[in-house]
Length: 356
Image (cartoon, rainbow, N blue to C red; front, side, top):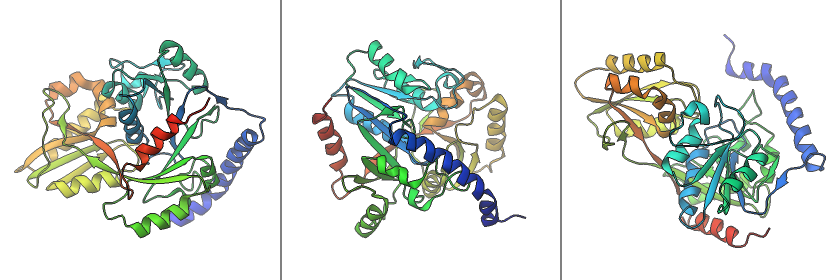
């Protein structure tokens, strides 16, 4: 059997070739042969250097919550793995297969916020502004590698347990571009930090990830809410030590979530699919079989993430007919810097000082 390090060594030439291609593309933007579009209103990009798992969706939601009561805003995303093409404004009634799971989640949680998907976001931003002329801020979801748009503020996320500085290019590692790409970031957020994060760690990690003197570095963690029922009254259920959970997930980086649920319940069985997996009727049947196979004796429920619920909801009639006790686990971002309000102040001050 080929061990992990041997496999990485075999894949190294592919990673180098991939890196050369990425470097050429970024170089063309750097010297001006390729140009991004700069807009006259604030555009804030939230992205990463890796293929997923850093928390783009919760951090984009954090910005929506922070700003939507003060400024009319719009969210523009590519709509990863959607079956449609071109520009599409997202409606709460849409199916995730048409919009992608994350944009649909944004729209259902914030119905008054304009959400649009498009492959070409330099085209989508003018379109959403034309349709919603009151828009004052645009949030660009997963826009770090989308060089066709020059955001006014570039926010780069990197996971505490998988810092980009310790990673390698695809397919050896999880990086979508060279580590040096972090130099484009105005803000770096180290995500999914443990509750035990110390001041010494903050200082060490800041020195490691910071690539420009004027870059700001912040630290965040997740705070999970009470699971609520996917169908019906939306009743909430607190985790307890006499509860068995079937955790159904199709997201990148499940370790943080699994560790939390295991700490709250008696026993956890996980059914994991690939990130953004498009659930089928067969998958629903598979979930039912796993649930029925769980040992009896304690209370049993199924728990999934908000993002996965968007895709599972494509089979709502089947799920309702099976009467499965499916609960959605909400998650929110909490900043853990010495001054937890420093990130909020930074964003608001940047917007106040924004110049066209």
